Image 1 (cartoon, rainbow, N blue to C red):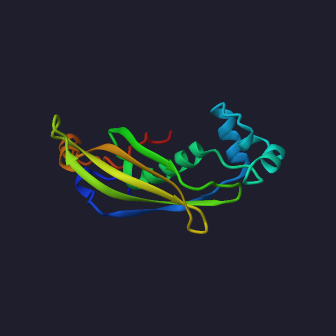
Image 2: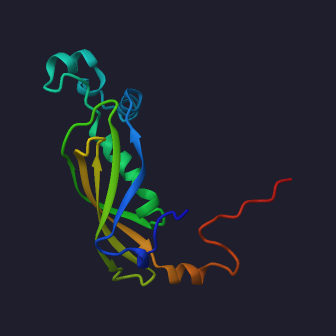
Length: 171
């Protein structure tokens, strides 16, 4: 299985559909909120959300949805990344609720060779997340620095597959 892409493998306009999707549970949402110290009652308190908000139920914290989509995109986009350079924009377009399933896809917007190092390039992408009904819930743009294939191949010893690490023989 391919994990990420080299600079040469990105084509402007290409769309990568990330698989599988992820059904968001109440546990996922609450754990993420607790780990990140976001204790807003919209996300954590069912009674509050049900009685005092327009949605009448808990809304999944947006940064979890962003993080989920970012993670989904790694095998297709940044699995070989040297660095994630920036998140240019992030929009939460519609709410996500417990039980929703999130699917993602990424479009390559632009690519350019590095101006300072010939062994890499910068790829600009836009990732979109949809729920099970096809509703757009989150969209973000980012830039990723990735290596060029020819430089990786030249730096790897003969017979070593840079895609698969070697493991010691069992004793």
